[in-house]
Length: 187
Image 1 (spheres, rainbow, N blue to C red):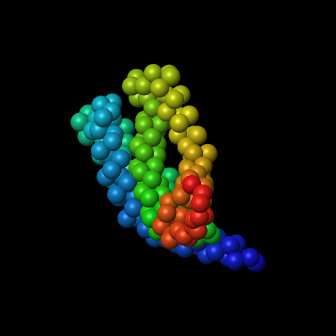
Image 2: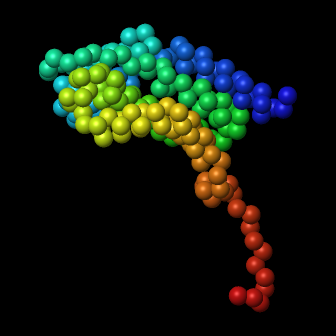
C-alpha cells in the first residue's frame, strides 16, 4: 500500500477512536454552545440542552412544550474523515487548527439546526401550531442537506483549502528567498 493510503487509514482509525471516546465530553460542550444560539428563538421557550450518552436532550423551560432527543454523534462523525484527510496530507499545525475550529463551529450550528428542524417538523400538532408550512420545509431541507452533503463537503473543502495554491505565497514567504544576480548595465 502506498504511504498516503496507510496514513489515511491510520488517521481514520485515530479519528474514530478520538470521536468515539471524546463524544461523551464533546457533546456537553456542543449542547452548552447551541443552547446559547437557540435562546434567540422564543418558540423553543428557552430550551435547555443536556448531553446524555450519545444524544442531546432538549427540554423547554419557560413554557410547556414537548421534549426531544437529538442524536449528537450523528452530527459530529465527520471528524473521522477530517482526521483521515489531514493525516494523509498534513501541511501545517496552523492550518489544521484553523480548520478544526471551523469544524467545531459547524458542529454547534448543526446541533442548533437539528433542534430547530426537530421542533419544526417532527412534533406533530405542536410543530403545526408554532411553525408555518414554509418554515417547516426550510428547516427540514437545511437539516437534510447538511447531513447528506454539507458536513462531508465542509471537511473536503477545508482540506482542499490547505492544499490549494492560495496558501502557496504564505509558505514561500516563510522560506528564505534565493538571491538574484543583478545584471550589470540593465535597469
